[in-house]
Length: 101
Image 1 (cartoon, rainbow, N blue to C red):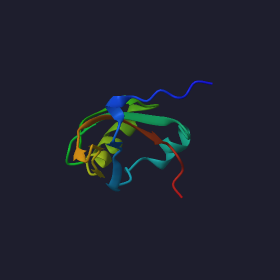
Image 2 (tube, helix red, strand yellow):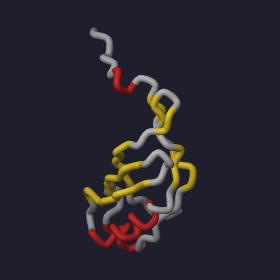
Image 3 (cartoon, one colour):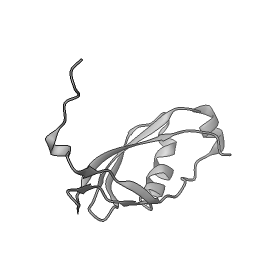
């Protein structure tokens, strides 16, 4: 078995993680209709940990888009770091449609 290849461009990369999150305001009936589907959002995370240029790439229903995008603009992240320095990243965020507890 071959050892996994390492990508030298990702050595020393610390991934981002959310510091503040806000749940989107979504219609619970609509969620039930599309339960367990995933909405995929593309964004650029800047060196301050804010999401920029958000766009929905996959959704079961366009009525979810405004609520999802509005909530994500208020999220903040510890930015990704490369060799200890904050770096901007292109990210895909998957939001599963689950029932509210």
